[in-house]
Length: 241
Image (cartoon, rainbow, N blue to C red):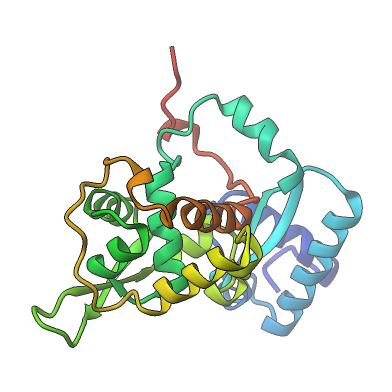
C-alpha cells in the first residue's frame, strides 16, 4: 500500500485520484500507483460507486472505456448546460450527431455509406468529428477506390459514458413506427459500399422523405447515451458575451 495509506483509506485515495483527472483510469494503473492488489482496487471502486449512488448526490462513479471516472449525475444535465452557458468546445450540431450515430451503429463505415443513410453528402460533419477525435480511420474498404473506413474512438466512449459500443441503446426503440424501423435497419445494414448522393449536406432534408424520422431516431438514440456530463475544464471553454 502507498506510504501512509491503509486498506481503509483505499476508496478515499481512489476518489481523490479520479477527482483530479477527466480521463478514465484503469484499475491496473490505480493499483500500480497505490501499490495495492488490483482485485482490492476493483472492489474499492465498486464500493465507492455504490456509496455515491446511495448518497444520491451530484457526483457518480462510472466505468467507461476500460477505466473508472467521476462524472456528474445525469439528473443535473440540464442544469449544468444552463450553468456553463456555452458548450462551444463540446457541442455537436444536429448533422454531426446524426453522422456520429451512423458511425456508432454501422461501423466500420465509409463516407459513402454514411451519406447513403443520411441522404446527403456528410463530409463536413465527418471532418468535424475527426477533428474532435470522436471518430477515427479504421482501415480501407475492399471496394473500388479503397475508400477509408471510419469507426468510433476511445474518446467517443469517454464522452458518452460507455464501456463499449455494446452499451449503446437499441436503435429500434427510437423509431416512431415500424416503417421507420425497417428503413433504419435496411440503410444501416447496407451502409457500406454505397456511392454518396450528390446533394449537399446543407440541402433541405425534406427532399428525402425517409430521412427525417430516421435522422431523429439516430440523434435521439445517441443523445440518450450522453446523459452523463464530463467534468469541465473551464480554461478550454468559450463563454458568450
